[in-house]
Image 1 (cartoon, rainbow, N blue to C red):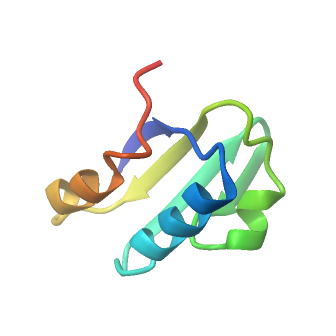
Image 2 (cartoon, rainbow, N blue to C red):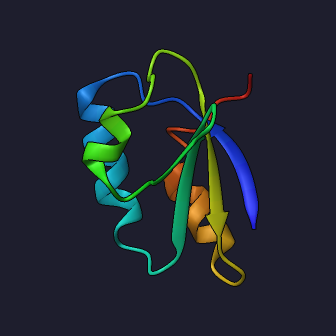
Length: 78
């Protein structure tokens, strides 16, 4: 498992993020405060506070490089 901080600060960014990660069979969890939601759930994402970075847990073992490549536009370095 790998954890990164991502920023989803617009509706278009949320939609493209969900479209990108649904192509993978792996599990992705978004953590904001005490809430943990499935990152593939667009409705769940909109229930979070999107004004600040969100923690993304990536449950993958083999294709991590490919996953990180497609997530690059969303990952924040804060």
